[in-house]
Structures are given as C-alpha cells and as structure tokens.
Image 1 (cartoon, rainbow, N blue to C red):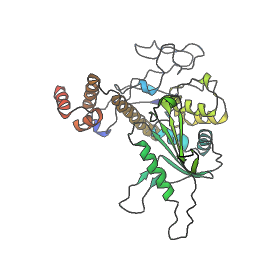
Image 2 (cartoon, rainbow, N blue to C red):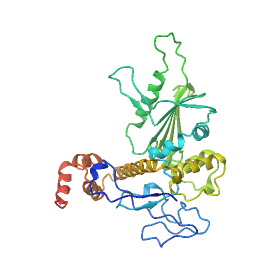
Image 3 (cartoon, helix red, strand yellow):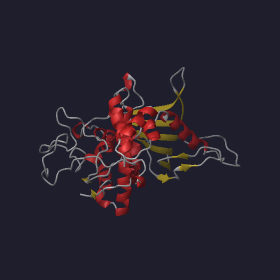
Image 4 (cartoon, rainbow, N blue to C red):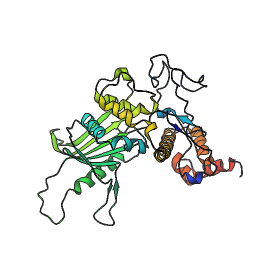
Length: 352
C-alpha cells in the first residue's frame, strides 16, 4: 500500500492556492481495521462489503463528503482519476482511452495518436486553447476534458474548444473543398450543467447540430458528450454494462482497496493496475500529491458555492482561507462576501 507523507508546512507561500490534505480515515489493513473509527469517520465494513458502499442511512463515500482539514498522513491503494495527474496517468494509455471512448461515445476506434494539447491561434492576438487531452483517431479528432470546479460558461468553453479544432482542419495555402473530419469533445464533469427535471437521471448528455423544424441531424461533424458524475450513484452489484463500469471507476477508484468482485473484464483490471500508487516513482508521487491537493481545493470552492444564503458557513469558510494565507481579494472572489465583511474577519485573526 503506497503512502503519501506530508510534512508540516509553516510557509504556505511555497504552495499557492492549495489547501492541506483532508482528514481521510485510514483504509483497513489486511483482514481488519487497525482501529475503531472516530466520530464522523467511515464505519467498519462488514465481511464481503465493498469498502466504498455506504451503509443504510450513510452518505455515499465520495470526495464530495471531504473538505480540506489539518495536516495528516493517509494511505491509499489507487490514485484518484479525477485529479489532473491521475486522469492523464490512466488515459495516456492508448488501450484504456480507446476502450473508454468506444464504450462512452459508441465509436469504433482502433488507433489513437496523441496531439499537442496547446492549440495556438493563427495570429498573436487569438486566444490559445489548452486541452487536457487531444488525439487523432480513425473516427475523427477527440478532445477529452475533465472539469471539477463548476464553470458558468462551460458550454461556451466546449464550443470554443471544438470550433478551434475544426478551424485547424483548413490547410494553409492549398485548395480545400471544406470537407471536415468529425470532432468530439468528451467532458467528464464533477458538477451538473443539465438540471432539467426530464434529464435528472441521465448521466451522459449528447449534443449535436440538429434542424429545428424537423429535429433531424444537420451534421455529424460537431459532437459533444457531457458526463455528469454527480448523477451517477450505482454500486458494483448494480452495474449493467461497460459504460456504467467506467462511470463507477471514475467516481470511486480512489476509495477502493481492491477490485470489487462484480467488476470483470481485462480492460477494467488494466485500469486499476494503472491506477495503483505502488507503481509511481517518487517524482510522480510528489506530482500526484500536489494534484490531489488542488483537487480538494476545488471541491472546497464548490462546497462554498453551494452556501448561497448561508452566511455563517460562508464566513467560516472565509476564515479558513484567511488562516491559510489567502488574500482578502481571493476570499471575496471565492465566498462572495463583501470587502468589509472579509476585512472584519481578517481583524479577528490573531496578530502574528
């Protein structure tokens, strides 16, 4: 079992905008829990129970239940695929990415070429697009994005990214008949952007260009696939197909101590093997630790965003940020408190 060790840090300036590792309880040792869980920790799993399966009345064990806390060592078996490092560690494996796209999008990809992830404009004043992953396949070009912190204009961002890739297909100084290759964006989201009642249980939303009068497809060259992970809450025994298994692993791998017996198939075994922390080098472990802390920071921000109208909780969160050295401008931006309110909280802190 790989271990991420964290030192006490007095100078937080070396880690800008990153909180401390949260109080995550230790997973079980072989065959038993090493200690009785404290109040608020996960209960001891019964024999045969999946460690990430919630007991009756318990909240699902997802990262949503964690917020940044005091410094603490913690152990884990698998990396978190929803961190920048974990996402790329897994999906820079061609076999895994091809299988994922084929199951999620419904394509028949048999080869992948990774492309530079920075899309530079033709002119110096044009905005650069930076993708998480960009690849060329026999089925078209694919942008694969992971977005944790909720972004108001993520739909517009998706249009900008796909338009950028489409425009790049035009050859320079050469005759071109405007025939396009299909472009896809597959966005893995840890928030909900489609909240209408009729799609509240639809985890995957597919968007294409359609004719308004007939409802028929106008073009298959622009394709968007949005995966809203908060809508997915199935446990291993409830998984019915490969698509649901991918969703489960994306959301729960970080909490597993072993592969659930219900998850079968060589590709998913490869996914978990690739995610094992014991295979990381010390340098990779350092990068992953930083990536994990950024992940938790984004979740703290997302939690704060849900506090609209709950002034006391927003002030508590603001105090937490101030204690970690955030400027009052950053706190105002993240909590939407007024400048006067933040300065008042700042004055409550002990003078150093």
